[in-house]
Image (tube, rainbow, N blue to C red):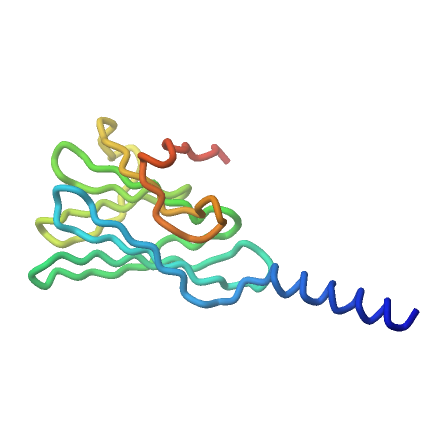
Length: 151
């Protein structure tokens, strides 16, 4: 009886620990076609049990262009960021609550209101959890665009 209890407690402890967020940075990156720009989003858990993360975005281009900014934090299953390219060669990184505009020529990142974004864009992919539930960049060829829920 005692052995079964210990084995049960051990199994429960292992299950609980495997469900924990580690707080270790999880980087995901992609090269944006036609821009020479690499975009990296790093997600870091802020709660050991809930889906809460801080997000940092870095852009890099050959020739010394590097910019890093903090994005709106994930306060509960809102880490996903859709990535788009415009006809003017701007890059949009759009989340549930924020939108960033990247100008690769100027090496700049700006916060934008949703209504100021062009509607004629090409979906490149998403920074999101992949099929194995790991933080990754999922290209448009692997998964269609997912819109954000209205809250």
